[in-house]
Image 1 (tube, rainbow, N blue to C red):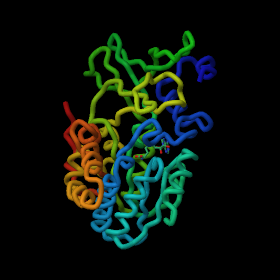
Image 2 (cartoon, protein in one colour):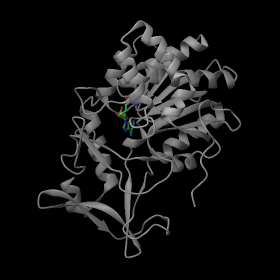
Image 3 (cartoon, rainbow, N blue to C red):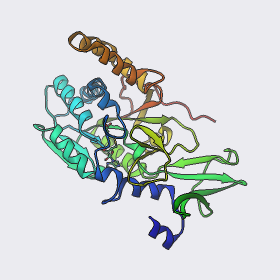
Image 4 (tube, rainbow, N blue to C red):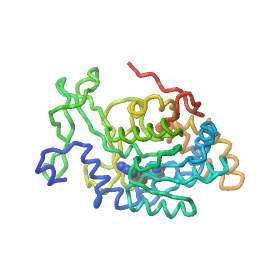
Length: 342
Ligand code: SAH
């Protein structure tokens, strides 16, 4: 990074994020399994099987509604350890009576190996890019995938937008503003405002949308963020604590909030359901599932997991769900997309 800055000048935040997370040798995800209690952060499927079970039921309902295509595949973007897919696939197979092929889009060799071990016994395929998925009816989930895609940050100063970049000064990566061509941004935002854009999401949403439009299927995208919004949402986490984002690249997780309105606009017509995670899981019956599990297990642990997944002060409101399917297909647990705010 220092060499690149020395050669080309300050580096966009998006470039910093892409290298910190995805550099083939030193990138954060390339070198470790960051999940779990002993890692840096815990995700919904690592909290409880109930999360993946609800997503698996949703996909099974959509598979039925799509006419039960026999050549359907189950797929996931950024599967981590494979925990979510294990729960989704088990429930999907139980509800539909067929064991579909599983396709994971994953770039990290460490996590590819973990997922392979977790999903033994399934017809499993792991590929690096969404375009490597077969042309088949596609039933896909992505949890905390889009928050890891690099964002560009732009700031408005004296009525002019400039890109936030990192310079190397006094032995630290230091944010600076670089004037130059910027994409069109909302002129109503006030001076000082920061706005984030995630162009890396575009080819992913386009690939997803094209497959569902051509072959049928459905997708659920779950992440933290909002329908719209601006501001600096870049955050770094190590050992379950917030840490400064531009220190020790490659050693800590970096994420940014997802702007779901932007994602939806990248798959027009297909993205047509949206909800908060808590409301979505409740509508699909997570409460009844928790009761059933509690009868045979540790009911304190299950009540705690239910609260973490759905509670308004836990993940229930911060995390959102976007649903994609062909126009007219009803999407259980999701409401129509919010209207653009003026
Ligand atoms: N979905 C999992 C893991 C979330 S962590 C869970 O909920 O537990 C983010 C995941 O996305 C990791 O598996 C990481 O390796 C993967 N990832 C990040 N950027 C990626 C990219 N550009 N292409 C493919 N996978 C990516």
